[in-house]
Length: 144
Image (tube, rainbow, N blue to C red):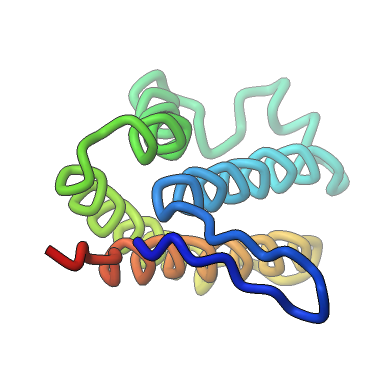
């Protein structure tokens, strides 16, 4: 990584380490997940479905699978910063691409009536996941 500092009309613009950028992108992705799931409680009848057990996560294994899907981005915030560059790059490329494709599948399976917000969040999440993949794939090299 170059240690140069760029200035634009007297504003200091310091380069941000790739590991920090990736951790922030995973954080943003996770916030989108959380807010989307929160807003998902508002469509009419949703709370009743949850209270009667008529929802997508009605089985312990489905709930476990959803937990794993949510744990990975949470862990990637830490792993992006703490792993060696080689492993961080591999994990970010792998999980970034997986989540971009997975979220794309979700996007095309949505009913648009009450779920326009879900489509919006899915598009933002796909962009973030693809940016994670792209940034990790183009990880800066040393000059040595």
